[in-house]
Amino acid sequence: MSVRTAEELPSPEPLPGRPARLRLADGAPGPEGTAFPPFVDHHVHLQMVDPDAAPRAGIAGVVDLGAELTAISALAGREPLPRVVFAGQFLTAPGGYPSDRWWLRPGSLRELPAPLPAHERRALPDPIETAVAEQAAFGARLVKVMLNADAGPVFDRETLDAVIAAARAHGLLVAAHAEGEGMARLAIEAGADALVHAPFTERLDDELLTRAAAAGQCWIATFDIHARAGEASALETAIDNTARFRAAGGRVLYGTDLGNGELPDGVNAGELAAMLAAGLGAAELVAALADPWPLADAADWGGDALATFVPGPPPGDADGLPGWLAGARVVPIENLEFG
Image 1 (tube, one colour):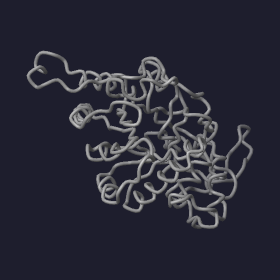
Image 2 (tube, one colour):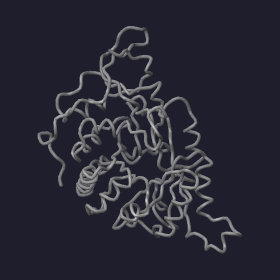
Image 3 (cartoon, one colour):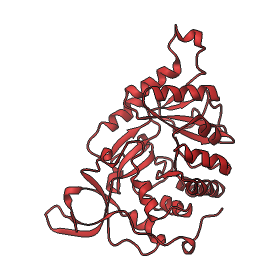
């Protein structure tokens, strides 16, 4: 499947926002536009970017998916924006991805051995349970497991099950980086709550996609990293898998992997264009941006006090949506006048 051209994209249906006018600092009326619930980038690495840039460009909240615990908990404790929810350290097999990557920040990796045999657990703390408990103690809302068979050892099913069980015991969700043959299947069959990238290394069969969608799994798109790296095959595979996952009822989230190469700080028009190519309509595009996952609802991201505001009239065709939405900014609701 190839990326569709503008002529092949569907016309946008009405957007699920509210017409509003921005009130300027001096009280004078500002531009008219559309107010949406707070937009969230569901895949970022704040240690690698300017954490203050996102709100200036429409992103009210971020989900950090790999960082040193002290640093990310400090960023999450800042006020007021962006609101930060985080997974904590990369959890991987000994010698597994991303242990050999130049960009890896000190302290952001946790290598986990196989779980202890049952008879040893009575006398020794289990390293998997200890690691997950530490993420939770620092305030993580989810854990991230690294399943990259193309770049080193990965967890076997027993170890992955142990990590997921430990996460469940602490009320944490589980997000998986699945790369390489069989890794998406491993994450889906083990019951991971989310894939942090739309699967891009192999075409998944429809039965597996249907199973993932029925289980309520989320996929975070991150298409634009492939486009910017010139990885045409990976982009095509990710879009094809996502289009079929969406058609099966799957939940697709907006996320960019901000910090991975040269990406814009706020709403990424290239990411949105690729999501349209995967079959998402206008309302679905906004839903993916405003989805509160891994929190419960928009109020948890400040939606009772904040909005993402896009000035100007909505475009008349789908091709104009990404650029229009990329003009978003985060504003206090009290600075908006609703018609």
